[in-house]
Length: 227
Image (tube, rainbow, N blue to C red):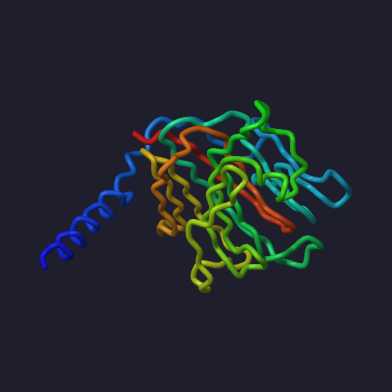
């Protein structure tokens, strides 16, 4: 009769052990960009046509596109790291203004190619990568999701649909992404939105700022080692 309670206690203990509770301390700065000078250190994938712009402008990275765009850091990240930046979705009458798709890729790798930078910027082009992905305000600002891509599967880890976890226009958000000892975390304005302990953790790969059909800006980006 006592076996079931003991089993439940054991399972609860195992679940607690799997929780992500330690995140280290920010240490050495690996890369930073305030986007006030020439655009260096980045590889940009998007449809280059009139009206689409991805460039540094007025002290920010501007992504103003009618389709998909990914701005990749040109060097891979390895180990325990924290990525932080300010990001804004602009809705002010521009032709590409749409309140949707504040997205991020991290620890991305191409299992079939050594060269990651071979894509057009269309969202489906990235389906065969291995990576973590957060989409804040996706699907026309109705969902916020954390996914893990791998083996052709875009596994949904967690999702929000409530207004508190969707986008507001013309607001600066402080986004923070961390990878630490098999866990990854997404924080927005200091609040933890997602944590995930990956049974097959992605420990190295590329970081990309991602969007689809919108006008967005990025500022004050910093990548640090987590000690």
